[in-house]
Length: 284
Ligand SMILES: Cc1cc2nc3c(=O)[nH]c(=O)nc-3n(C[C@H](O)[C@H](O)[C@H](O)COP(=O)(O)O)c2cc1C
Ligand code: SF4
Ligand code: SF4
Image (cartoon, rainbow, N blue to C red; front, side):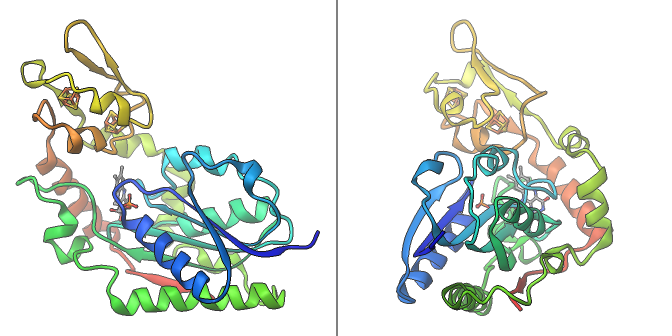
């Protein structure tokens, strides 16, 4: 089927880092003369994606994996036979893991041919013990990343993949190259249940005496783990809660809290044990 010069960018972003890359990719592709449609994996309509020449798929890394919320959108991807693909991921410099490879496999399962990908360090969106975003305070958790050099390289990779897509030059890229450079991460991705890390991370706690009953937490929990009880009581289901902490970050009154110091300790330990290979951009 003839493909047109339209690119679709599908992304999931919890705190804006991955969306920033999606926006940069959009600008780059428009400069190259492509028509671009950009949509969130949470609410895109697969029926609108008709014969694109290029599809970009991007998500953050959540616990060395593709975020649970994004996986639902990825499962709805339509047939992409004949399209070229590009994948991208952001991570807070703890575990990059196999996210680009997993995203590439998802695109290829739908018939696209992936020609490149990137995993970029970006500010970690957990808080520290003092309530600051880790990625705003510490270089080792992605402060000031991705920098100009990485952003330029990212835009260059998107441009190069778009040029190949136009020429239908789909040769010479093996998605195996998007696998993690650290075998321990490949192992974790395949064999360690994410539930282990979820259990280790601090749960969200609720203090009814501070709740203003604004409803923000219930509305914005992507896993529907918070329910209204009697009065202004909120109940958090620890089994379905993915520890994304969106609710605690948005709560205006401090009724939802997290032991951020415990999480910071855990992440620092994980960094020490595994180490991060930093940003990677692979397109040839
Ligand atoms: C639930 C959760 C889990 C995370 N897990 C990891 C991780 O395993 N490794 C890592 O380096 N960063 C991790 N991070 C940090 C994010 O990957 C990073 O801040 C990312 O850039 C956020 O992207 P976004 O702003 O598009 O949501 C995690 C963040 C959240 C909220
Ligand atoms: S941390 Fe909060 S917003 Fe995130 S899944 Fe758990 S209850 Fe929902
Ligand atoms: S966001 Fe905070 S104040 Fe608002 S309903 Fe939830 S717990 Fe209560």
